Image (tube, rainbow, N blue to C red; front, side, top):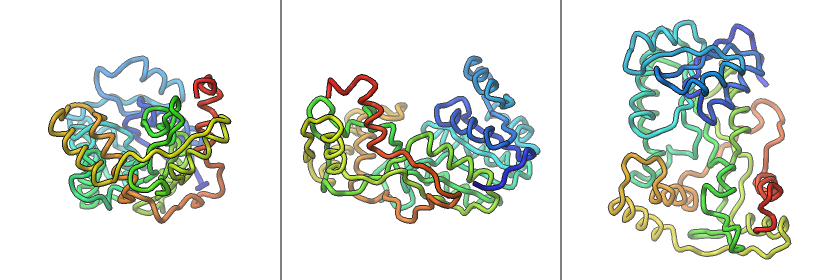
Length: 310
């Protein structure tokens, strides 16, 4: 773990969100001074929760450059954990970046927290390409930056991503059942990111994976956990998945939705094609830690009442 100082001041955008709240807690546990940036009119209860952790809540409108610059003033690092589409990931983050530069903040950590968007073919994953677009703006700015790339959130294995079909005894795959897939829990991402935030020498990109497993591995894990035979289920080739995602986007674009069905297909495309695979893992940069495995995530989910249904 990097050395910390009570004088390390972090301006955290998105602190009232899921990942942002976890990150605020980890930073505070490490002795950082956390200022949580919220918009005017934000949920008072969410702001109160962050304040209860020990953070100071700072209110600023992203459309007000002077207010954003004032919020950034004196910070050692600005961290973004915001989530959304272009108005958030590109536009709002760009305004926050401009404010950080104007305020003389030394470092910026963007809201990447994803698979490797740098290696994706154009047009194959809208959400990740928005992160890549912001990356180009960030790399052109006179500020030191660090992005954390963690693959998919392992928490999605329990139902948000329809990969493990608990009620059918199947685990889907496209292309190859043995394609390795990167997963990291949100808690592990938050803990590691907090260390990176407090590390002034952190490199431009840090790649981490709590676990790397294939659909075949997941099927064997589910068989072991439930005592019921789970099998990999071929859902088609990656080119077919890419075509289906394209058709879905044209037929039901849902431009304002973060995760329409076709976007989920694009995420599976990025994973099963290997295009967004992580390769240079820095899991041990901040010393040994106990990474949560996919099996532990699934076991915890089953022990919560789903074992009988599976």
